Image 1 (cartoon, rainbow, N blue to C red):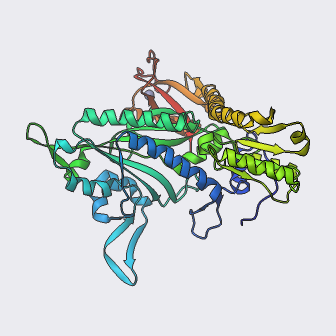
Image 2: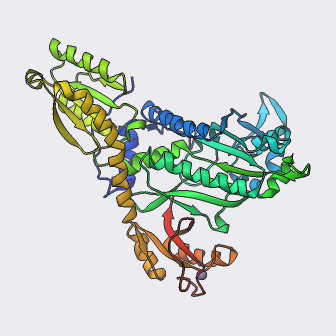
Length: 484
Ligand SMILES: [Zn+2]
């Protein structure tokens, strides 16, 4: 067994977010950063249990929408990566290369996949023949390797991470666009409705696209320190790719045509970071019901009493039918156990004491509201089922409200600076998302440390005035935030 840290968190989330995050990772035993390869960490059971559930939520939705699972090789030949120049240029600085097998130098360098477009596309060119094969929708869960040069942070940025990548082939640009919209809906269905994460989907400016993409759309989640974290992005891939990899199909009119490609990459280990950051508090973790590593814990307060033990076992048996449950028989004092499970974010705790038992009552503690409820013994299972349905909703509503209050309008660089300094997202009118706008974005970044994250597809406002930076006619409403 791993050594359990008895001590709770010693800093407040609002006061020192960075230290809070570091302590939470260590004390709740989510990851061990002491592995002896720089930038690589060990994911521990409490995070893996949850991430397994997150994978499963996401894969269920993808399969329902027609994606089929694959396991592709981890190694990609250099020649594949070289086929599309902007893609190589974008990823090359971060690629880990395998150059030897035993003592023998390999004929061709092999990349540890930094992403798998060029692996999938190699096979698509063999598999895709006719419009009847399309749309061709795939995905895989995989670990990805990137030699990050920026400082690493557990779950947020490390040199190996765990994700799902989807790769799809379409017959037309319109179908590719439809896929991108579907990916955005999937993000809402899973990240918001199941994991309780508020986000905005942005179309990224032309200077901030995925290497080799025609258009990039990405979801930004906000941290309490005002920085946004990029979560899933979905891309319409440039036609250069299908040309470079020779992905063609015979259309209904018997003409041979280049296929359209899309990809989508929900990084589960990074989304896990947002889950603990958005929902966690000064006591520790809080989990949405479906992705909690453990859903119910039973704490027998008089643990050596036979009646209590019997009751605990019986409750466990009944709860097991619909939730994961565990009895805490450890030698710690009840108070220590309470703190420990609250820090671990278990949604429901049952405190079993002799006095309650005599009165045919049971005490439940719910972590979503940090509240105790005393219920009749006979109603306890029904009550747990009821609470289990409320937990995700409560966490989501709280997170949504916080997020909405962080978005504020700005008219000039001074106001933008004021808003991002106060941990918000600034919204302003802007000249251009093409090359001409990049200069204004650079001024913003230089003076405020924040970036133009993009435009919203569902933007209700229309630009009426001038760009907040250069004063030229505004063509867009953009959102500006500091980012990880
Ligand atoms: Zn401008």
